[in-house]
Amino acid sequence: MTATSAKQMSDDERLKKASPLKKALSRPEFGAVAGAILVIAFFSVVASGTGMFTARGMINFLEVSAQLGIIAVAAALLMIGGEFDLSIGSMIGFAGILIAIPAVQYGWPLWAALLFAFASALLVGAINGWLVVRTGLPSFIVTLGFLFILRGLAIGLPRLFTGRTQIGGIHETMAGDWLAPFFSGVVGASLFQWLAEVGLLATNFAGNPVVSGIPVAVVWWIGLTALATWVLLGTRFGNWIFACGGDKNAARNVGVPVNLVKITLFMFTAFCATVYAALQVMDTGSADSMRGMLKELEAIIAVVIGGALLTGGYGSAIGASFGALIFGVVQMGIFYTGVNTDWFQVFLGAMLLVAVLFNNFVRKKALEAH
Image (tube, rainbow, N blue to C red; front, side):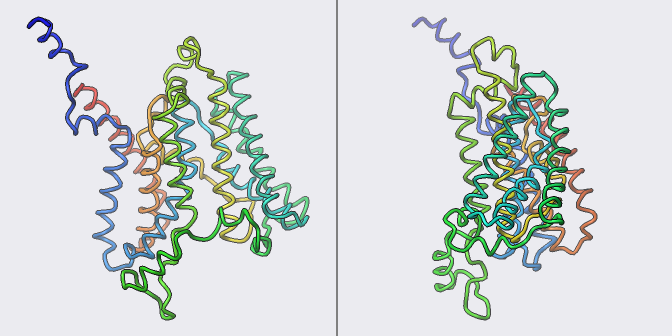
């Protein structure tokens, strides 16, 4: 190798090692991680002594974050792929009704009712995706239509079969059901019991640990985030998602099955909405037609806070999860500090605007650094 060629190689930008800061700035989730640290630090001061950061308090905000995070992860993949799903919230209410009516009114085993709800949700997701790719209509319009269709079905079906919009009695169907533990209860109970016995975890008046385990919703959240991250960063399908969101025509020209990718992503959002519904139904012991109201907007906010672009082709599941964590910490922080919860919507809107501005700033700095 000549001295000239060696110098040319050393001057090549592609061969220069980026600093850790530059690498961090180039990651879509950087803003959300920084925001989560800031929010936690803020409430650790203003909510000091309220119990927010005790074991029980942390489980509370993690569970709130997990419920939103489950649907935010799916929304993130879909937005990276260049589409929106405004029917997620309505799907939560609809899926809950599909679990409750067969199980409570007709005596189906709970596992059969759950599988029926998941199969129905996947069908709706496939129809959503098929309409988007076949008609060329914006997914905003198609899923807005399904927002009303599914909410209407969630109200009409229980009224037709039971005469009311809330169906109870789910807890009675859970006993001995093999699928129920996947959507109810806690994980790691023996570990938490041991922590209490050795004095590392507080106990109540009966000598039991104040936290009996990790809620199964948190396990679903972590598992789905890990799965989505692996798909995005470690598989061909993940590359296809980014390609579809960046330029679907160019992606199609190089052989990416754009229609299949988009339909699959819509089915995944429907699946995650049903996971959310099942967790909620099992926890409360009932289904309600109005469950999931505005959750689609909260999911989009979490994804945007997590660094995804509304135009598609950029984002991460980890960022969406940290966006959900910020949401949970703020929601429970307002509760623990005694601030009127009416102000939560103000915080939510402000977080969205700040996140968009901050993410745009970070992306510009990252581009300048390169």
